[in-house]
Length: 94
Image (cartoon, rainbow, N blue to C red; front, side, top):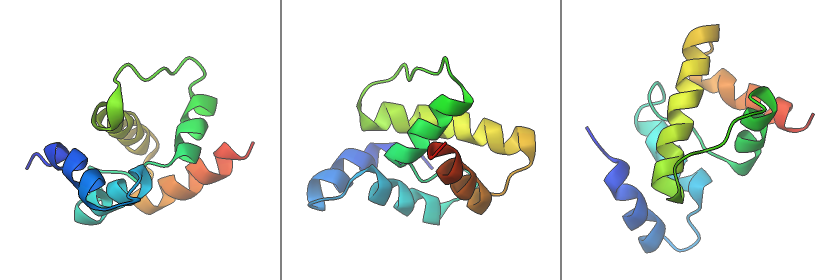
């Protein structure tokens, strides 16, 4: 089911809903496919992948790209959905 089209509506209709809140909804729906997206996690990815530059603009595009990258890391290193959040949090404070 494609649900990315709901992102702008959720962000518009729920005052104060930022990417962390919105991505949490998708994560609760399917944590194998969607990941929680926080500014700190983006920092962590740029530490792990120094030449990382998100090609997409806007929340929807960046969130799709973010999920693709994080899911690749989870598969490559056999990381559970709950573990990746902890790992990215710790890395972001290096």
